[in-house]
Image (tube, rainbow, N blue to C red; front, side):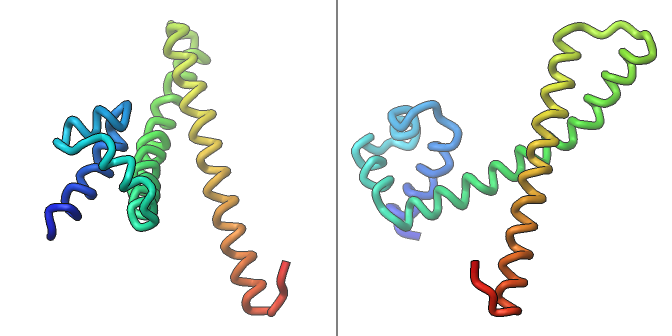
Length: 125
């Protein structure tokens, strides 16, 4: 792999981890202007978008995994056990975000099915 392609792949990784373009540039040892130039490139934008989608998918999977723990916290509260406000708020947030992620996934799947159906039937919307 050419050094530039390797640097671009590393830049994508650090753009997702860093709080700024400057921080990502410094971490990988390139000029900030170089990353800004890459951000204008359609291929780089596509790669960044795809990598971001994968990272988001992993985060949603982890969030859904926490839903079971959140339900356990609520169950403790319902059974009269002591839970803190922080635990309650965190459990509610996890369940809210997990439900939203699930709803978005269903909407994406429905859109894909509708597109397939339209393709098969020749209907355009």
